[in-house]
Length: 315
Image 1 (cartoon, rainbow, N blue to C red):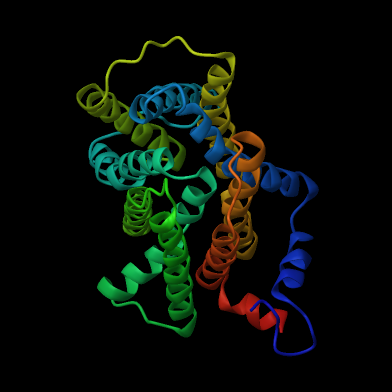
Image 2 (cartoon, rainbow, N blue to C red):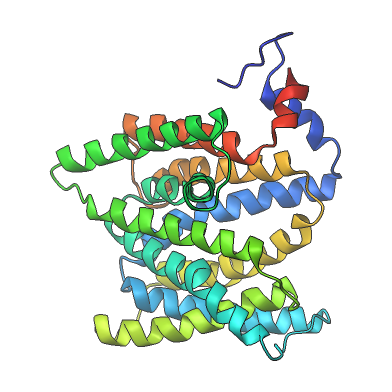
């Protein structure tokens, strides 16, 4: 699928050549970011062995938001919203942070972490499909291919969950709702007229979502004991410092400078890293459906995120 029609060149080769356009520091930062995002999925699964999902999310997001706030304020970013900027925080924060993070953690609770990562990163494809169905965007062959690839991905994983003795197909529903919420939020973000710096917007969306999560958790789950093993505390530190902290900081530093194809390659690798690292971290062994599904979802992400000109140049 990635082979170019002429000259034996491949899209992967073209992407690797474009990596030469970014400096070594950016390259290592991109690799670190992909590993952080990928490893976070089995780390979340490990955390849920000792703490209920909503309280885990509320606690780690609150601490992550606080230290991001202090970091960006130290860097001189304007952090205090003004006037209608508060409205943007609420309207964008509900789908992008509250919806995505709540549904995703419920999905991770039910599914193998690598499988949850694969389903969560169908988001870019849902973004394009929503644009085609509701916003008048053009249906291209690339979009049609991506939709078919996602359908095969979801079908493969549903079939295994339904046939496995301990299968939990509800987790697939949670993850696809999460992906749809993130997709809707992404489309809203693209159309929003923002005056608040993106760093501040992200922090305040996290603060809003964490406050909501504390309330939802208090209603839906029993109050935790808060006495955990050393491994559990390590996973929570990872969530706060790495997932909500360093990964966000690295992403903001790279997002304005990375070529589109390079960003897409990073996103494509996250579900693969999540699937492979789960074996080492949680002892979850992927099935053949997971390996096939991750290839299909990576191909779908490439189809919708990598601009057509990169395919043409690769040829």
